[in-house]
View 1 (cartoon, rainbow, N blue to C red):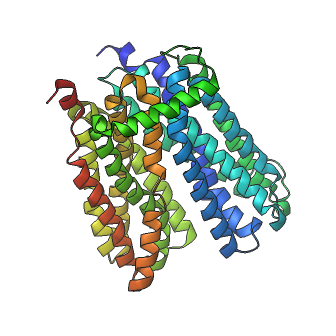
View 2: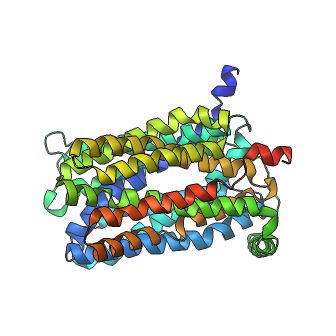
View 3: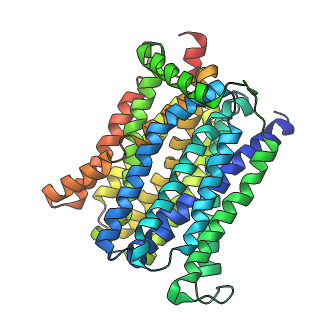
Length: 427
């Protein structure tokens, strides 16, 4: 393969958008703002946790409902980048506006609204961003670019997190003079995240191209035709039975992985007595291993196919996941956890590349809207099961075993999903 095929400016600019947008879920949703919201903005941590869970859940539901409609409408307008720009600006503006969220309980609902808008903007932008992959990368390189994008996402999110920690949070390395009583140092970090997303997304808008062109269909008509296309897809679902099985499998294994990440820190603290610093270090190490895995498996995806890569990676999560639940020592917990991380990135990257390979060319946006739906529609299921089974059994280990069950169900359904090359050859 020629060097110019490997280093393609337009695909590299596409992948850099993963680097740009990952700062928001890493710093805002997972680590920094979520803790600030529950501890300093909400009246108390119980109310904060409840409201935060509702915000994340409702935002995910809105994305699940709007994603397929947006995708179908984009299939008819033929344009993606204007929508991606609009939703990117929504996310950036909402994130930057967190500067005005001081440690004041009266601002809790404003904070919740801003986080919800940022999440919706980000996720809807990603629906159409993912759908651009098959237009930009050749069929032979879709796997590696999807993997490289995921790897860049993990790297960008972690680098932004570390930068925020050192430049704004850690007292010894903090830049400038901030009023810590009003949490200016934290709030400045949120503005930094917005600037990070805006700055590093610029190459995407400058160097990627709309392959499908502009159809001239007005927005209102595009939405109506998109809804009609969704209804037609539902009526003729047997035509896309392989995609339906893939999305069904993804519902289970994505829910399992999301629950694993959501409850990993709770399990580490409750079973092994790890403090917040140790859990943060574990989270950083887990993300590093996931990024490394996504990068390394990018070539494997193109070599053995996305379906096989997903199956291999799920096995790589299920086996050490079982070991992790049975682990008695903290060292074994770390080893099993980091092994899981290596395979988490490839599952996500290969899922994207599988959809990019099998989606009908005239329905790519709609299919990636359904792809987003499959990742959000049942996001409540895993946490709900873990919570109830933990309560009924009185054991974190038994409750967490639900995650392995979800992953196994996804694995078994994925066995019935045909490989992309089988579909191409008509086997």
